[in-house]
Image 1: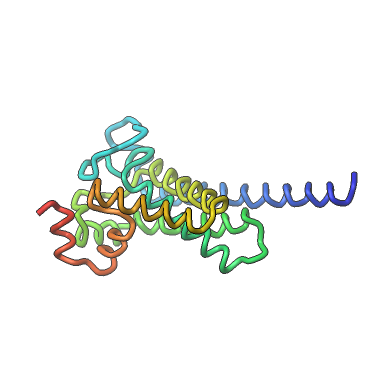
Image 2: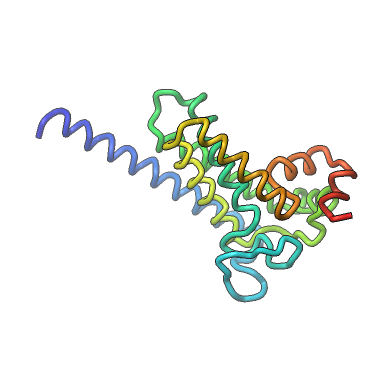
Length: 197
């Protein structure tokens, strides 16, 4: 074995360890949400690939929904953050940082405080939190976004983010930008527009 081959094997081994750590973080997220009393799947008792109705009891309960693109964009943003904070580190180490941030959000998002904030400040009047399955899929969607951003030029990643935001904004009057705005600084005019008033 040459030194170069040994070095490549070592890099692959380290990458595998970082990815294993990412799976560990996801497992912790799932466990914490289980201990919080979150439902594993939709209360309806079945799993759908796609839940296309935002104002329904199935929203945020199945494998994907209109908020999945927001989590892909999280991946874009976290890739950029990792690039800034962890220059010189392998992409797999940066993915671990992104997974920790996303998992922390997924746990926080499903606390009574944040759920009640969504109900009070946004159009999500019937929101009662994510199922564990949906939350885990949100984290995986973030990882997909991270991997996309790691492969594409910045301009292409930004363009995809803009298209996703405009598309979901048009289709359901909500997207990552509006979600953050309404969670942090709710505006009655935006809430009325989102409600279709």
